[in-house]
Amino acid sequence: MTTNAAATTSNAAQVADSIRAAILEGELVPSQRLVEADLCTRFSASRSAVRSALAELAVEGVVERVQNRGARVRSVPVDEAVEIIEVRGVLEALCARKAAERIDAGQASELRQMADEMTSAVKAGELMRYSEINSRLHRRIVEISGQGTAGATIERLRAQNVRHQFRLAVQPGRAGVSLPEHVEIIEAICNGQGDQAARMMEAHMVSIADAIRRAGPVSTH
Image (cartoon, rainbow, N blue to C red; front, side, top):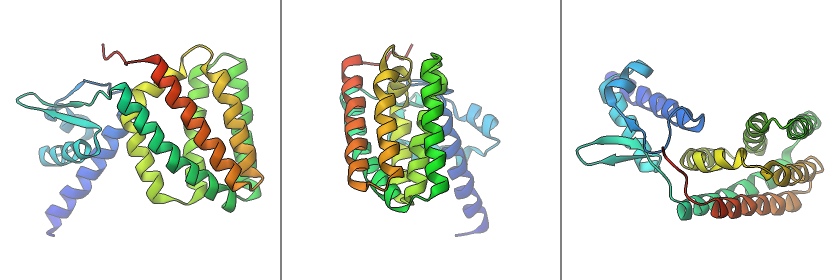
């Protein structure tokens, strides 16, 4: 690979990461058009890097290409959103088990602090803060587990499903259901109970899938 080709590949990977992050943060929403010229300006990237990034994201299922209309953020239907959560459930259960095997005292204290912060957010009715800590918790469990491959796959799946989960985060009563599930997962991990942590994580993800099913399609307008 030439130096220029290597630089383009690196830049494309950075652009793909930036687009994925923008989707996860709600800056780019389902069905939104992704104009190459705009992306070049936004991310200070070449046209070839942006095209390569969009091609990578299309393979991941985060972006879709529409004939004669360019690319747009893919809108995921409910049935597929449920499947994505089910796959994530298997991977996150693995990570919860491994985290319970590897966790140290400092990391246990960190997770329990997150549980306290989530409880405080729910009591105060601060649903967006709860959602942010929730996402941070899931990522931290993956980090503690040391499962890099599973973590990368989970992030790609999360980007596809972000709109469905964002809607659940602000749904009245949902935080009251998910909070005790998170607290139980945290305690199982902190106590080194790998099998218990895995079962609880998978049950939690099933709960999310059921909630997505009940909520129905996401509006893209």
